[in-house]
Amino acid sequence: QLQTNLNYYTANLFTDYRFRLGVLNGFRVGGGVNFRGKQVIGYRGADTIVDPSNASNAIDNPNVSAFDVVTADAYNLVTLTLGYQLRLKKKLKANLGLTVTNLLDYDKPIYYRTLQRPVDGNLRSPAREETPSFYRYINPRAYTFTASFDF
Image 1 (cartoon, rainbow, N blue to C red):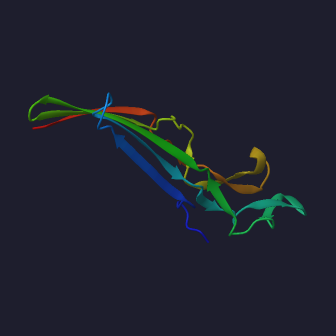
Image 2 (tube, rainbow, N blue to C red):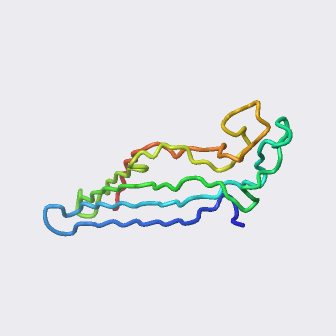
Image 3 (cartoon, rainbow, N blue to C red):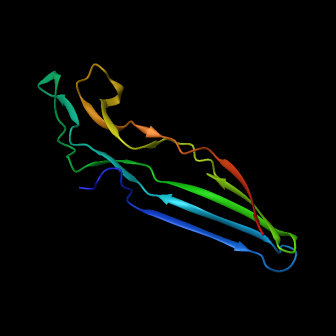
């Protein structure tokens, strides 16, 4: 069995480049991606179906087992960075930076747990299935401006 709340795959790729010559001398541009693959958030072992011999009872769902997983979707988070370094005096340099996190404004819920719910939302049915329920959101797109000085 796979442990819950662990992603199947994760990958991070970040890079930046500082221009040292020409018109763009002193500028820096960079970016990156955090990839989070599907995540196991539960198992289907407690799923039930309506008992064929008594419609008011539920029995174990024979089509799933304790090894059938419920997963949360994969997602990407993209970051962009921009910077500029300028010399103010002989020994005084200013470093200006702009970072944009969640550049693509990913706003879907990220599920991390499950609970039992009525199959097809039918509250009269005793059948239940494991479904994603507890979730969180990624912070929306944000801009951070920084300034530092070297002397």
